[in-house]
Length: 98
Image 1 (tube, rainbow, N blue to C red):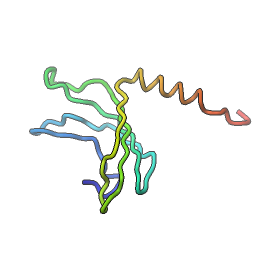
Image 2 (cartoon, rainbow, N blue to C red):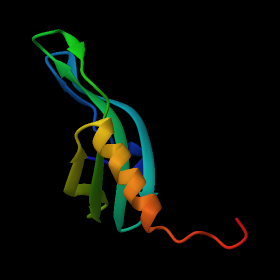
Image 3 (cartoon, one colour):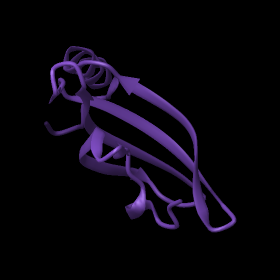
Image 4 (cartoon, rainbow, N blue to C red):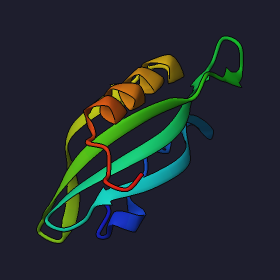
Protein backbone atom coordinates (compact mmCIF):
# COMPACT_ATOMS: atom_id res chain seq x y z
CA UNK A 1 0.00 0.00 0.00
CA UNK A 2 1.14 3.50 -0.77
CA UNK A 3 1.26 6.19 1.88
CA UNK A 4 2.22 8.96 -0.57
CA UNK A 5 1.17 9.83 -4.12
CA UNK A 6 4.77 9.39 -5.21
CA UNK A 7 4.64 5.71 -4.16
CA UNK A 8 1.60 4.92 -6.35
CA UNK A 9 2.42 2.75 -9.34
CA UNK A 10 0.83 0.48 -11.94
CA UNK A 11 3.85 -1.82 -12.05
CA UNK A 12 2.68 -5.41 -11.64
CA UNK A 13 4.90 -8.46 -11.41
CA UNK A 14 4.20 -12.20 -11.30
CA UNK A 15 6.82 -14.92 -10.94
CA UNK A 16 9.63 -12.45 -11.63
CA UNK A 17 8.05 -11.10 -14.84
CA UNK A 18 6.84 -7.49 -14.98
CA UNK A 19 3.43 -7.89 -16.62
CA UNK A 20 2.50 -4.20 -16.45
CA UNK A 21 5.46 -1.85 -16.83
CA UNK A 22 5.03 1.78 -15.79
CA UNK A 23 6.98 4.12 -18.07
CA UNK A 24 5.87 7.52 -16.78
CA UNK A 25 3.57 9.01 -14.17
CA UNK A 26 1.94 12.43 -13.91
CA UNK A 27 0.09 13.47 -10.75
CA UNK A 28 -2.96 15.51 -11.72
CA UNK A 29 -4.27 16.13 -8.19
CA UNK A 30 -3.07 15.42 -4.64
CA UNK A 31 -4.81 15.35 -1.32
CA UNK A 32 -7.45 13.12 0.26
CA UNK A 33 -8.35 12.17 -3.31
CA UNK A 34 -5.53 11.83 -5.82
CA UNK A 35 -5.75 11.55 -9.61
CA UNK A 36 -2.77 10.06 -11.40
CA UNK A 37 -2.13 9.41 -15.09
CA UNK A 38 0.25 6.59 -16.03
CA UNK A 39 1.92 5.68 -19.32
CA UNK A 40 2.49 1.92 -19.39
CA UNK A 41 2.94 -1.25 -21.43
CA UNK A 42 1.55 -4.75 -20.88
CA UNK A 43 3.74 -7.80 -21.37
CA UNK A 44 2.56 -10.28 -24.00
CA UNK A 45 3.55 -13.73 -22.71
CA UNK A 46 3.00 -15.40 -26.08
CA UNK A 47 5.34 -13.04 -27.97
CA UNK A 48 7.52 -12.44 -24.91
CA UNK A 49 7.63 -8.70 -25.53
CA UNK A 50 5.87 -5.55 -24.39
CA UNK A 51 2.90 -4.31 -26.38
CA UNK A 52 1.89 -0.84 -27.50
CA UNK A 53 1.86 2.21 -25.24
CA UNK A 54 -1.28 2.66 -23.16
CA UNK A 55 -2.53 5.26 -20.70
CA UNK A 56 -4.57 4.81 -17.55
CA UNK A 57 -6.06 7.50 -15.33
CA UNK A 58 -6.65 6.39 -11.75
CA UNK A 59 -8.36 7.89 -8.72
CA UNK A 60 -7.21 7.04 -5.23
CA UNK A 61 -8.70 7.87 -1.82
CA UNK A 62 -6.47 8.25 1.21
CA UNK A 63 -7.91 6.27 4.09
CA UNK A 64 -6.16 5.32 7.34
CA UNK A 65 -2.93 6.75 5.97
CA UNK A 66 -2.88 4.71 2.75
CA UNK A 67 -4.11 5.36 -0.78
CA UNK A 68 -6.78 2.95 -2.00
CA UNK A 69 -7.68 2.61 -5.68
CA UNK A 70 -11.27 3.73 -6.25
CA UNK A 71 -11.67 4.02 -10.02
CA UNK A 72 -9.77 3.88 -13.28
CA UNK A 73 -10.15 4.69 -16.96
CA UNK A 74 -7.90 2.96 -19.49
CA UNK A 75 -7.06 4.62 -22.79
CA UNK A 76 -6.45 1.60 -24.98
CA UNK A 77 -4.51 3.16 -27.85
CA UNK A 78 -2.57 6.24 -28.82
CA UNK A 79 -5.23 6.89 -31.51
CA UNK A 80 -7.88 7.10 -28.79
CA UNK A 81 -5.58 9.34 -26.73
CA UNK A 82 -5.10 11.65 -29.73
CA UNK A 83 -8.88 11.92 -30.22
CA UNK A 84 -9.24 12.86 -26.56
CA UNK A 85 -6.53 15.53 -26.86
CA UNK A 86 -8.19 17.02 -29.95
CA UNK A 87 -11.61 17.03 -28.28
CA UNK A 88 -10.25 18.69 -25.12
CA UNK A 89 -8.44 21.31 -27.19
CA UNK A 90 -11.68 22.04 -29.03
CA UNK A 91 -13.50 22.53 -25.76
CA UNK A 92 -10.88 24.86 -24.28
CA UNK A 93 -11.58 28.56 -24.72
CA UNK A 94 -8.83 30.37 -26.58
CA UNK A 95 -6.81 32.65 -24.33
CA UNK A 96 -7.03 36.34 -25.08
CA UNK A 97 -3.96 37.81 -26.75
CA UNK A 98 -2.94 34.67 -28.62
